[in-house]
Amino acid sequence: MATALQDLTLADVAVDFGDNAARVDEFIRLGREFWLVGGMFGPVVTRYEDVTAILRDKRWHSASGKLAELFGVTDPEFIANQQVSILSAEGDVHTRLRRLVSPAFSPRNADALRPFMRDVVNGLVDSVAAAGKADFAVDICESYPIPIICELLGAPASDRDLFSRWANDILEVFSMDMATKIGTIMKAQNELGDYTNAMIEERRSKPADDLLTLLIAAEEAGDKLSNDELVMMVNAVIVAGTDTTRNQLGCAVALFAQHPQQWALLAERPELAPRAVEESMRYFGAVRETARFASVDIEYRDVLFPQGTFIGLFLEAANRDETMFPAPGVFDITAPAPKSPQLTFGSGIHYCLGASLARAELQEALPILARRMPNLQLDGPTVWKPETVGIFGPERLPVTFDPGH
Ligand code: HEM
Image (cartoon, rainbow, N blue to C red; front, side):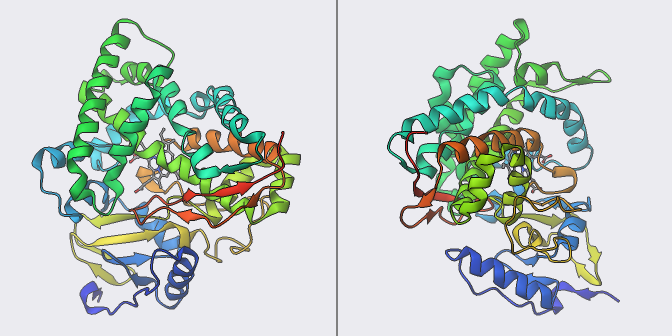
């Protein structure tokens, strides 16, 4: 007979968000004692096996469409807009969307942007190389993803500032005080929607070599994306594909700054880039957790989770699970690839759609940075971003390095 969730007393993690390393360690420690730990919005799982089992179980639905509800937002127009996103869609609706859009996000299409990615990184390093000093988060991470997303979508370089503002405003959906930011979020979503609609109209008459054209053309068995769905996809790419990438780059470089030999090795052997990306995402991922809710009553490991229960999936703790990774506490970009993938891109049906693009962005950036910023060292305290739901990284990352490269 399964135990009802409400009859369990779960150990709570007392360490606050400010001390990330201590908080992760505490979750891992408690997760070893019992597989469910108490969290902010409900129980949390920390072990690799449980995190992947729940992410792959279609009865657990994405909580991203519920963020507004969790944060007390009641605006009906806002809530209706959130519900159609690929990030929160489930069942046949999600399957259909994924089938239609997946080919546009193929590794081949991501690879086509690699030369552009290298140009963007080199341009950013050019502006700080002579000084041998930078705030890595502000000078490099902040400006890296937007030009790439604009190039991907086919938006002109002159509109990058616009996209940057829309991305910043729309990304408030992940902030703890999103309820006070609804006006800003909706304004940016509407402006982006108008912009995208104008672009769609243009591409319908004049196709180009870009993601929007591919998405417009995407068709399966006579089925096509509607205009609203195309706008939603552009919105999803900005919500899911900008802050994630810039924070992951910041987390990786903060990590390398504490592992100077690994940094020097990457400069010497750029072919290590793919392993460097997976290992830094495993050891220090920018998406530390995600959440699901039970769409029906669910029995799992002898516990009954009533319909509507929220559950936290602690990706960062699962990435340190010693039953899956032989030396989870060691950061080593030369270690053989583990049998199981790191989980910072998630798992199951919502597995990151932009993973090939994100991998390409990081694989191109890191070796260039390692070569052009030799002897990288922290130059003062790193300031971490304020508590948000999911995405984490440095707000300030002052570094020094040997100038002139
Ligand atoms: C290092 C950078 C990135 C990380 C760490 C990351 C991480 C994730 C994670 C963990 C999920 C699943 C969330 C869940 O299951 O609740 C996800 C989904 C998604 N990501 Fe990424 N992402 C990154 C970059 C990107 C990029 C560059 C794009 C687009 C260009 C993108 C587009 C998406 C989309 C559209 C989804 C939703 C997929 C679905 O629900 O079917 N991501 N991402």
